[in-house]
Image 1 (tube, rainbow, N blue to C red):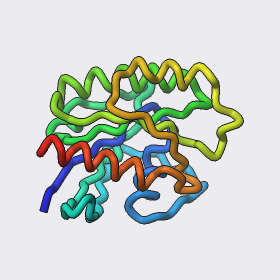
Image 2: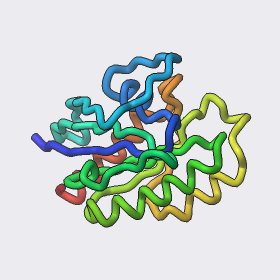
Image 3: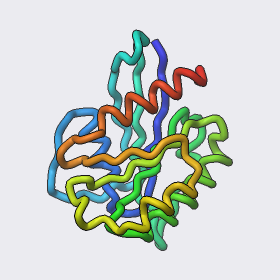
Image 4: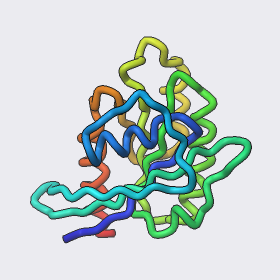
Length: 166
């Protein structure tokens, strides 16, 4: 069995915890709870015939008062940079976290999750073009609320981690 550490990182209130809960437990809550430090959840899955256990690290949001410690990122095989396309400032935070992750976990696969697909009409158009500058392996449009795209994005991330043999 393959075991991978996956870190969800991004700005404050982009939906990291909601995405983790949707992926691990297939639930969503409108009630907002701030993550303090890190919350680790696990899920076993099978991808392309390989048995995999993901340890999903839901790391607190980055803002001007609190930054993500690089120690949380060490040993990660996958980094999911979560962006809220209704808030363009979250792209800059994801860009900074991507650079920090490359130093802390240089072999990790990085993907961008454009969360809140259920609010697509409110997305700022510049976000989808700017997010390409992050240099992640893939960009996925997802909704923690409806579940759309969540399972597929984690499956693709897992496939990429398996290919790297991490």
